[in-house]
Structure formats: C-alpha cells, structure tokens
Image (cartoon, rainbow, N blue to C red; front, side):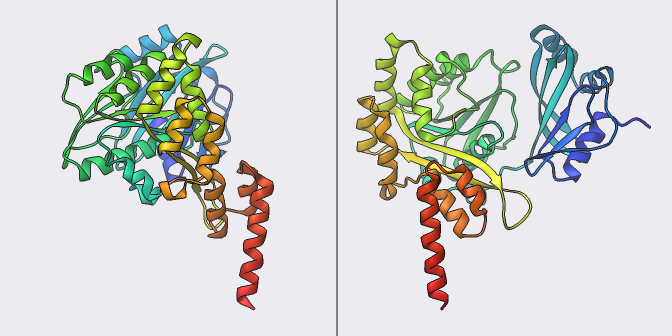
Length: 363
C-alpha cells in the first residue's frame, strides 16, 4: 500500500528527525541530528511528490503555490504534531520541506541560553535580535522567549508570523498571534497596526526587508519591546546586515535609530554533540552598554567584537567563549569547537592550557 505524506511525517518523528524533505526522483529523507537520512529505498517521481504535497494543501494554498511558485504554511497532524511547511518548484517539479514544531517550546535554560537572554525578556522597550543561519534554532529561541514573557509578565504580546509555528495560550500575559496571509497582509502592516493595539511586546518571526526593519526600529523606539530574527552568522554581522538593507542616504538615520533602540543580539548555531546523540547550541551574546552604543552610533562596527571580548560584566560572551565552555564540559568535541571558532588558533591554545591544568590537578 502506498504511503501518504502523513506516514512520512510520522516516520520522521519516530526516527527523531527535525525535517522531512520531499524531492522529485529521490527517496523521502529526514534530517536526523543534522544529517539527511532516507526513509525508504524507493525514489519518488515528480508526479508522486506533487500528489503528496498537494494532498495537504487547501484550495487557496494550491492556487497561491501555482501563482507564486513557493508557499509557507503550517500543518497539524493528529498524534504526530505540528509542522512548518515550505512548498516550492524546482526544475518545474513541486517539492517541499517540513520542519517539526514541538507542542510546547522549551525553557530558555533547557536550550542552553545564558541568564542574559532571560534578562532581555524583562525589558520594557528596545530591540532584541536572534540571529543564525537556517536550521540554527532561531524560531525555538524566539518561542522560548515568548513563553518566558507570557509566564512572568502582565504584558500584551502580539506575534507576527509567516506561518504561525508554536501556538500559545493566554497566561499571566495575553497573546495575539497573527499570520501573514490570513490575519494580516504583511509584516510592516502588522507592525504599524500593533502600535494602535496597546501592545507591550512585539514578536516578529523575521525582519525581511527595509519596511519591516524600519517598522521594528520605530516600535522599539516608541516604548515597546521588539524581538525578531535575522539571517546572519554572528552578532556583529547583524549590525552590518541591518544597515546594508537601506540605501546609502538612509543609513545615517538607521544607524542613529539602531544605537538608540538595540538592547542586544543573540547569535546561535547547532553543532553535533560529543556526549550523546543530538545537537548542542553554541551562542554569542552582545548587550548594548554605553561603549557598544557609542561604537554603533559612530558606525565603528569593527570595534564591537573587541567590546564583546571584555564585556563579560555586561552579560556578553563571544562564540569562542561558548565553544570553550562546551568543549571543556564534554558536550562538544575539540575538533568541532575549532572548526566553528572565530579564532581557532587562540581557542586551540586555550583548550591545550585547560587540558594541561586538568592533568596537573589530577596528579
């Protein structure tokens, strides 16, 4: 009997996978601990893949996919869970990727975040960015921060998502979740409207363009806490990314706004664990103290990393600090730590010194 897409999604979860990929002329594959693993030996042809994907879309979603050639959507499967789907065309074939979304987001400390990230959740206004490449867990961190705020603050939270992934119930705070395409037309429109909805906290799944970045900065400047994500590899890279979105004549104004509104940046990546199956999160955290604020205002972004290195008292740490901690705690292999380090030679010396000290203490 032919398997349907619900069977493949269930098999992905049973195998501990995070994603299901359906591509023409290839077997269905699950991403397990960061690696793609075929779920069966049989290739699916383009017609079969299209049938599988179209079977879970509404008529409106099918029409949008045919019109735009790509579609973001959410899918709930009974007794399996929720998934974020992206359907798209590749060499004229319809293909798709599905990301599993747990029912409840984890706590911040379960993810491995420092207390500084929890402190960001207590702020009354300003901009907090969660950065990283695709698959680095940004959405999960965003959801964990939303959970923390809901559980601890009497706040009105509005999320703007494309699509809605984690779903929340009202708790100590109230929450309204708005989805692009069904609840609002665009990120900028939703952000502007939120300022007239007595919002305390705005959670924006992604800042994609000039309009959404400008609207988020304005909201952060006018007495709201704004938390969003950005695709960059480092905390300092996020500063360049935001400014470079805008034309040269607008950049001085954006830099001034950024210096005044930014509270902090969390950059993260997921790496293979050394102590158990799965992955562990390495992070970099920038907090905006007076020195960082001055460097941003004067467009001296190249100095920000040095300020992070000496900013531990302000709750900052670099990626290499995180890699050192993970490696010396046994969560990450030395090889993976060095492969991901910003300054591998320096980290290598630090790790060698640590191992020598451990050997001395054991004598």
